[in-house]
Length: 437
Image (cartoon, rainbow, N blue to C red; front, side, top):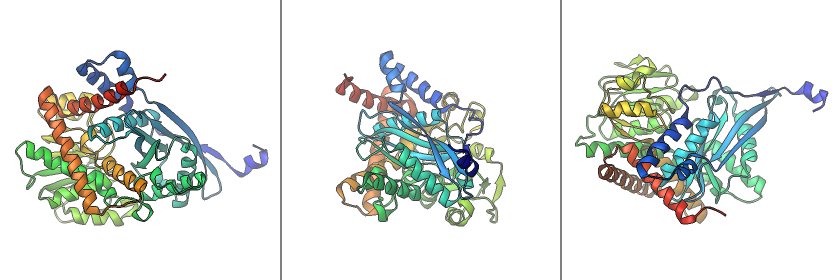
């Protein structure tokens, strides 16, 4: 680069703050070791299951609104293609790490296998704080990232989707960029798009809807009614807000919700439709500043330890740890987020008789409807929302029943049962395909 150009542009690499206390990839590997032992898998196969097929790290130069050039760091990880094309979201967050993305890609592999859809797991992420970027900067970031990972993605190879801090807007940009660079329409290169661009009706609500369906299923198995059940939800984005709203509509009493900006509690039950409306029109769609009669703001960490029947952690991974697991008062935990409970915390919750419905089952609604969207894009034949929701409910209830029965048959927790079932299906595909060459 010439001195003149150096004088006109400043290159700043976006770096993550201190890494989170919990290493997600270590959590993932510990789970595979545990389940591999339970299934009697040979060590070499366990080693294969723990490792991603591909890890791509990219530098993403973006021209900022003030004319500077800022270089962001991004990743795309493909964990397994044994059962089909890779599938997984893209998140924008300051604390994205390659280990986090590797873990999330692996969990996606098990998740797709548990609900028995023909995908393997992938994940992507960019180290950035989207709240500090303008719409123009986010668009340029998304388009350049798409160009950098384009050699890995495609309708038959790897299909991205929304995740933390991304949504239909970013997926629209990704699809348009891929189509322009490939010189052909590529609606099926990504899911989670707006309906006008080939998105599936009901996709935005799918993960939260799946969490609500699974919550009702576990309550039914444990002989409890949804009506009057008390619920706390950590995270009020697409997953948490939709799950809270649907459970509220089903008669549950959602007494606590939180997001990165604050936590709110009302013993009589929060007005969830009002909260959803408030968040939709607040800056960055956050709960900060919300107030209503009878509602009190509480420290965010107290949300997890509220005295409720059901706790739904729907934020980020590593939220329930050995430090706070002993103070969890909910009798049922339904994991709306990916990896919110550490292995150490899992042991504590199980010893205390807390029923945990694992992430790879509970929050699989998003990837199920992503599969539906991909199928519709490939066929150029689109369904109405009622059909999407009905198909989603059938898949989620069938998967829950399979995991429930497996857990009873193997005398295992729901998490171990889901992992065993998912890993068994992936192992079957690997063995049938063989190892090339």
